[in-house]
Amino acid sequence: MKIFTRTLFLAVALMAFHASMNGQVDNTFRFVDSKTGDEIPDGGTYTAVAELIDKFPAVPGLVVSLEAPFEIDVENMSGDVAYVSAHVVTEEMVSGSLQFCFPNSCPPDVPADYTTDVGVLAAGGKKSLQSEWMPTEGKYGTARFTVQLRTMVVTKWIGTGDNQIPSEYALKANGPKITINCSYDDPAGINEVKATGLTTYNVYDMSGRLVVDNGTEAEVLSLGKGLYVRETVIGGKRVSAEKIVR
Image (cartoon, rainbow, N blue to C red; front, side):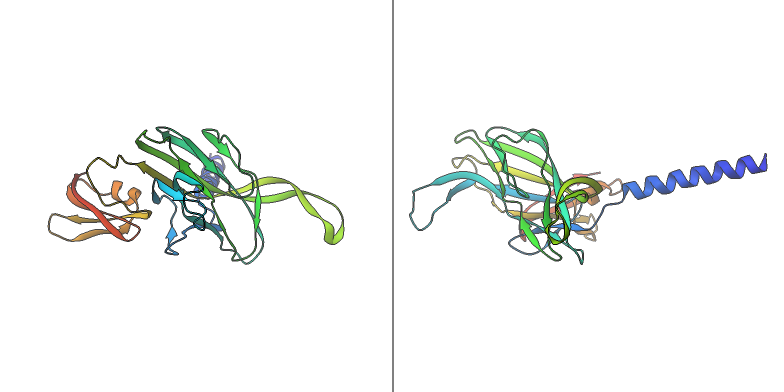
């Protein structure tokens, strides 16, 4: 009976260990705000605002596009070449389409649940997401996407010697996952502070004590029951402050 109990305990412990390992986030790659260089952490939020963008400033008005660009880089934090793809989910999109050109391909119609091809990044290298929401002009509203990085491993090569190139890949581990919130506002509406970039929160309790400093939405949601003041900061700009009840 003791042997059975010990064996059962070890089996449960091993299962718990593997579950814990599977739940960990692989940090081979990270998201970085292209403008500020700040990391957008796992569970973090980025805000993008749609605007008319002149694609060829040298010839003003030649090509003007309405889009909410994701000015985000992916950085290889390892000391070696690493392979990456991304899992992109459209949670909400009032109109238009998503253009997602990372890491290589740029499909004309991105599915609501989309896994990209695989690209390579040198040690310490960065690559832009090269992506944006493109709303339909005049159809004001919002869009929301989640993007999770995937660390890949080469399972098959073609060629010989120094001329080998990878031809097949497998998922090694899931990396950080972020939410990208987009807005396309009616210019005739109420004027608000329109900021883009990494979104963080400062939260104060009713005594004025700072309980969340430059935190993520998940940290706000994990607060204990009570009344708080939440300050929203986007791209380093304080855009709003409101009372919240947890």
